[in-house]
Image (cartoon, rainbow, N blue to C red):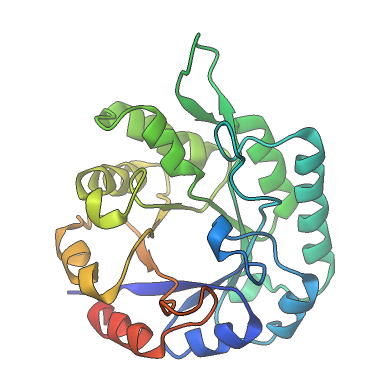
Length: 261
């Protein structure tokens, strides 16, 4: 079985250097933002990692989940902040296209259906940010899981395909997903649909499997997820200790790396 690459979300330059012992890619978030699901980091942290050997993906997320209503639906001022942050990081000189650096974000909109209809990819706004980020690559954040969740636990294959193609049409190179609300291990059937849909999309789109991925369940995930021709699948895990939200458990990182090797 071919080796699977590991992406590790990190919340400080120090944790990033620990992660690099096994990670093939880093997702950089603001220090202390793990409880909110990761937020836009400081420029100084990006600068500290300018010379790391692995691709660096920068989270672009101005806030965590709101107290009421769906997440990933942003106000005009929040969207302007996201644009400014992308421009700031691009112009800093600390990101490198040849290394595979890029950005992670996802913007949703409510459907026009009456009541609480499904959430949708905000095609216009996401496309604008992807163009702004160019030539750096972009990954659609776990906002994707909110789309799947809003369609119900039995979302059809056509719904999954529509969501994947909507993300691809915006210009994203990948999608970070647990296959819906909850953990990846609980959503294997949905994840399989996502992988198939991603492989079938024109030129394909990378699927980054995250959400509760640990060494204890990664083997089952690896064995049960399909790998159709043209698919690109990575695993995503913070490997954090239970004592602190920002500290990587080096033993867990090593164990997970062994499972994926």
